[in-house]
Image (cartoon, rainbow, N blue to C red; front, side, top):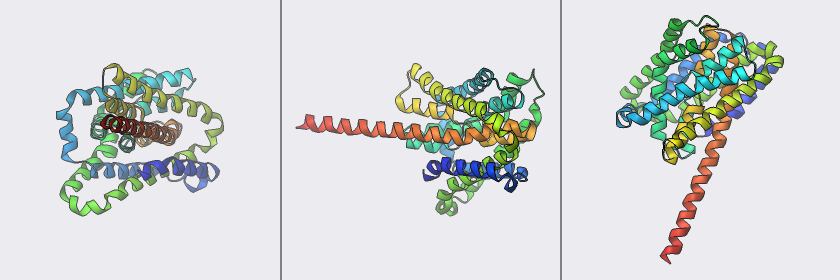
Length: 315
């Protein structure tokens, strides 16, 4: 919990440091993929067989959550990018971000928001596995007529960056679960530090372009995230889901694996295409933490009101 709450502070501090001292990290681009691999390895180490069994137990909800993720977010990214006049590499970046799976921090946000944590973990896991195909294909569907999208290379890249570390983490967790248990509480902090360094590297490399590009990209990232959070919640509400499921769909839809977006963008497009993912990584943890605080407080107030009503009726 503390890792997610402290992440925005560390991310902003690192972004500012890299902006004023780009020479420190601008030569570290090759570290982005290994750092993301560490994050994915940590994710795999937290997964158990029950997370995959959840898919069979609630297939309709899982399918609906995945559909929201992969239908809403790329569309919102493309719409927002066009509306704000983003073009070329920046438009690639915001669409690619939308085509990525749910972010690993979303599970902690689900817990803090009193949402359905089991459903959230399963959605993150499922969208991550599906991203091998969905992320490259969706990026091609939106941008393939405007530029070359290396679909097959991106698929292979996601396998190496995401699936291999996650599978290794699951295997380690299964084989050495008892040994790993005492250190698992440190995994979120390692993941946070890895993502913070990724943000620092991208800000350092993109530093010369920041004055002109940052304002429209920040606006695009803000609206992309807000539309995802609102769209996930109200779509679930319209379908008659209960409050906990609505919160879960909101968080899982609106929070992206921005680290993957950054890695794919700088590998297959350019550093500028990685800028939306880097800024989104900072912002969605801020918005997610605020939303979790609001929903968590609301749940506690409702519980206290019910206790008050029950005590009055017993008298």
